[in-house]
Length: 627
Image (cartoon, rainbow, N blue to C red; front, side):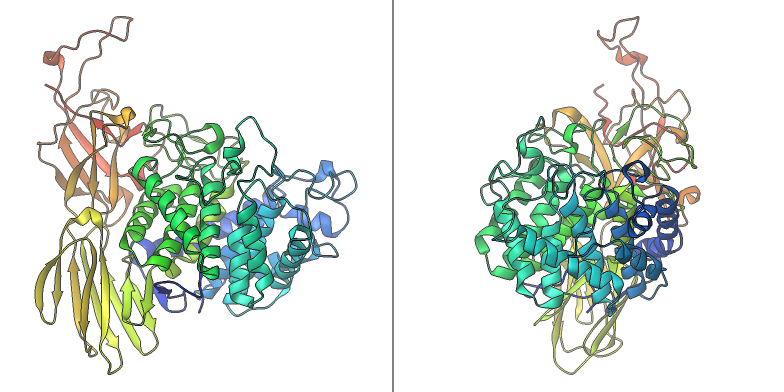
């Protein structure tokens, strides 16, 4: 089986890239764009910036400190690209991974150590800066690339390099080695996957050691506090995710992996408890996580500003990884619900329509349109009003690339009762003697048709997720029509080739309000349609309808229309929206005269498509008209 997460236990068994094939539609088109544009683009920039060249210099013994390029963690971008290439080839593509594998392998030192920042003449010693050095973090991505290669049936220089590195880590940081850990969690889930693919328990034991060491004040205190890298409280005692969002979510993913493989139900329950509170109090409407620019971190409960939302793309990728693991462990639809919201409204938002520019942060309001970025240069900052072709810190493009290449492994599962579809995309799903064809224009249309093309003689259950946002859906089966609520619509029968089931999800526009404790958007509403969050962009409006003074009436009609400028199937929404005059006259406070409001019409577009038509202002949350 080919897939990024293959636990040996749990409520559900994932189906891999060799069993789930996406074709066309929202995600199938993005997979092709990822293969044809994003992966080659990332490869080109890794060469252009010298991040790949660091490995060549290291292999030649010429990596003097002044010749090394990129940040201390840039090695990991090469590994994430290698993982993306491995999954792309595993689903039938032809990414040129052999050269990458050879270059990486040639730089590995005797004993398994591999890093281009430390350990050579003129460089700092190995493991001399575990707080910021990212050595174990980089190993994690190297190991995940090796796992992807092994799962796709290949043993080569990359897989040998990854295993040697993992063995080195187990010696250096095992029970008899250095009693410390990395400032950036990531290696934990990589080691568990290596255990799953090789059967060697030393990797699982090392992952468990790292999880148990975290939160013991092993690392020094820093200005951002030990919470920044989750070394303040043991994970079993934490009540919500805190600190650097990507670090927290990677650690939680690794903890779930350890819990599942060791039968540690208390550890699993602890992560579920943290997920619940985080989703209830620290998660944006888009599914994004991380509300503070300082420390790229989670904020306090209900601290969710729209314009200052950080919502790093990598945190969204990590959230999907965690949701998928929790879904496999428990079988509960709520985890697939969050994964869907995050995929459509953050992961899909990150990449431009041509697949060659990327957001790092994903705010829900853009106050200043800014200016177009130079496509020939990396952007020095994480935030911008435009997607950048590359950044000085470019963890997000390669993270999205590996996620999209492996997306087929996040769609469907099986158990001893039958098959479950958690995410809806056109294509085929196969498990044993059963094969299904899925036809849908989701998320633009709510109809999902599942046809049985091949099956055995025994009865089995087909389970289709009904998202929580749907409230209720219509299920059409060979036995008739019924209304089904959120969770899973289950059809149990003896199937025959040609049998069909149709799920009709209500994707009509709907108004959404925020919990009043989210002060930043109190008195505002947003518009959603199916799984998509919508936003207003200044490009669709003249200067009379300034987005910073627009108001909406949620009793007003919302009309739909096609917007071919952003895609063949894209649906735009139009609503009446008056503007309110500012308090004015050199002082931004005072009474507001409702009579000074002017009528207008507001166009909303899917949030994941914003900033594809040049620099714009944008907002998701719209103030209510109080007249």
